Image (cartoon, rainbow over the protein chains, first blue to last red):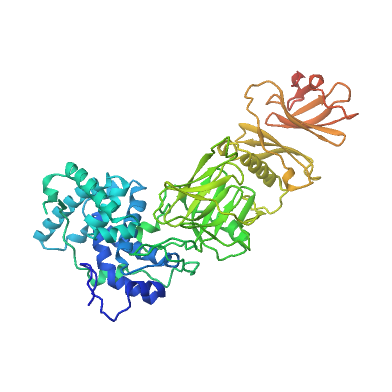
Length: 197
Length: 380
């Protein structure tokens, strides 16, 4: 099995690469890409929006955007995930921030999608969501370049190299942006939303 | 320092299937692949092509205004006009951007359609989208540039340069969404650069006529000489000349002279509160003048405008609002009588010579419905 990002489906060694699937560009190839990365994108979308229901919308929109624009783009190397995360981040900003809905979303009462869980799990989910909202509000206040890097590296847990490739900048720039962003976030976030590595 | 993030969840099968897009349902317009953009990694290049469609099954994408607050849903009438212009009754569009009197519809197939009150513009048959460094131009008319933006562009504007040495030019802001951008420039064919965020792209050389325009009227009447259409043509001309759309919307015909001959003058009104004139000739469609709005709000009789027609002179004027008829003379000829609407009239004076009308010699007698004189005196 090829190494895969946590949350992405494992891929057999003899399976076509992401780049090969992308190059094929038919619905079966994109369905395969969806199967590989739906869970990863869905979790990332939640971390971008703090709402599981919105994450569903965002996940669908991300894959649909990739599908629509597949003819315009060439995947140079595996994997498609950094690109999909970049699309998700862009769509999240363009859909929500421009409509001034982003903040409202962050403050929205949690949806029913967690209420079927056990009570302890519900409490835990709400706690997580509350802290995630705090984080997202702080991330939202970052300069754009830092915010994009944070979304990929700190929220998406991509490597700085992958983020650099996805954003088309040097890796050193990503490291620098992350460093500056950490400093800003440290000032903005209370201690209980941070962990010391 | 790391962010305290919620743990990832395993994706339930039902949620996965609920989110799964129908990849067969939405097709991009083009399939030509762009060259590789980078030597390493997953760097992706947006390099032309048009793929503008909407995914319509998810809630937040169903809302009009997808991606930008200026994006609205076109009316059925707008859609019908574009279908006629494109000669494609199956053409679909759910997104439109309004720039003053101009509307630009974005088709699900990536084609754009530009509407004014009296015209429709679409890409010329032989026009192919032009690739930019990122994105592409899919439509270009005298005042509109539209296409697919570079991925992740947040802003789009056009630099307009008139004289690159003396004048650095000005910018026209446009509308950009993840799927398309549309920019309206202030002057014709003046865009020299497109600027997406902070990145400038020189306007590529385009065919001499990248767009095809046809008469296509908001009124629904196809006759370019229908009075309502004539007013719309006058309004469009004024808008193209730089007048504000705010002053040019909602005009309706009030009076006309010479319409049957396609050579004359009209008076239009807006809510019976504002009045304007416009002249027209049959020589060409371009010979319809701009709508000239009267800004004089006093009650005194005034000349709104005039036009020489052969040996006649059509005089547009305003008098007392109670008047139903006026008798106008220029001092040397018998007076002519004209009907009055909303206190306005069009009188056709015979000119004995090629000499222009001397406004100082104009004399006006206005009568009400009881034929009583409500005004008598000069008009200037």
